[in-house]
Length: 460
Image (cartoon, rainbow, N blue to C red):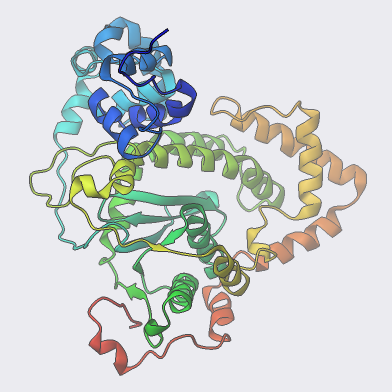
């Protein structure tokens, strides 16, 4: 039997991951098809794929468009109630994406607008009254600079956050939550984990001039010197004085608006009900063990949501408009320069051994003796999946179990000793932690040679 002149269609298994990724980024069918071709997701010499066949494949994967789904206000009512409990301030664009990602509901903007006017008119008026103050900031291209900052708004719960943002495309490289954000070895590990995952480092790292950022400054400069000996004598880090490190501050502001309210209500409930006392050692460690991994999963989902969402059109913005992940993968489509520097795995391992040794106590969520007890109690409960509905119930059950076990085993002294050792690794004293880096052989000469550079940051 003779074949026709057309190439066979690409196997769906070859392109499914790409279709799902670009669909999640909000691209239309033609843009997804172009991205599959440009990104080399299938062999164009062997296979072909037209727009009609692509649409059939997309629908086979359960990825339907809002027009075909044709959902009305009452169809989304139950899902909206659930989402509003978690995201009380989410607007139309945000809620549209949340319905798609968390409930697999493709909803038209007109349907959401009608829902808001019918059920949430007061929130509509509240969002219309918000105004933002503009700031000017410069970036030359993708990964021209990676801007880092810490966040202490949840300090009263014993939780601290840290993030890093690529200003040019608005991509969040990490949002981490831990029991400290002032230990330079911990912060450096975030940077090295990101470099290992992507295989690249930025041209410049940028942060506030706090001692918690000494590790990133040293590690980033070390990597640059290893890959480019001509950079010796220069520090590849930019220190920004108070209120000048704008990009991550914008990211924190958006987190406070979009993510924080719903989860803060959950955290406050435990404090107000008397379930959680931060000064009680058992409470504090149990809270860490239960809440930090759960909140990290939620923050990772939030980061993925932001990185796969197109920003609102802004006529005052001269940087490219698009989906951050898509702009990073296809910079040429947006007329953008790419300043990523490829980094080798062996030098990352060397940098980690120097500036973020994995055996340091700061990387311990709870002391090992406490971990053994609480993990046994968790298994005895059937290892339930933590959700917003059972997180406090799980915490309280584990607290009761731990008190009973500590009393029956008479092991509180050994555990208390481990806890005191772990406290020393928390990094509550930034000066003592910074001393680790001051004792190392200086990697750069912070002197007048910097003055000839226009792109390399310096101390001071």
